[in-house]
Image (cartoon, rainbow, N blue to C red):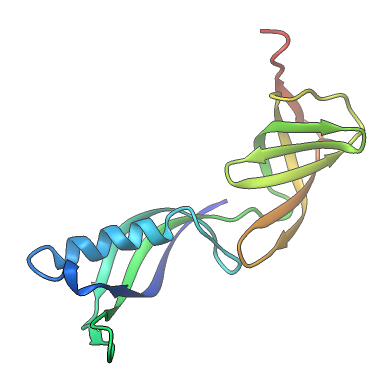
Length: 154
């Protein structure tokens, strides 16, 4: 599921980026550092949608770097147990198949024959959240779940 939330992060900026474009440099560094990362608490950061506040910088002794507290709005993706997702099969083995829905990898056991590159609609039945990734277990044993598009029939 996607959420629009407000997060805060302390950004360190090198002195060479000070000047007229300080805020723009800070925002582009924030986007580069944050977009596409995973936080166990919030999920995958898909995109930064806005900057709410850039606080006053604090100069770090000895380095010249300045630390700015930045409050920003972003869209995050976090799957939940019971959620229905559409995913693409990435690997099939004798135990079942693995599918991906965006940055999330999902394993489904081998109760049906599915091929690589098939598109499936599945239900999340369990999640495990690590510091840098989210892993899910899914099923297609329910109404309206299963193969959506089979690459061999097109």
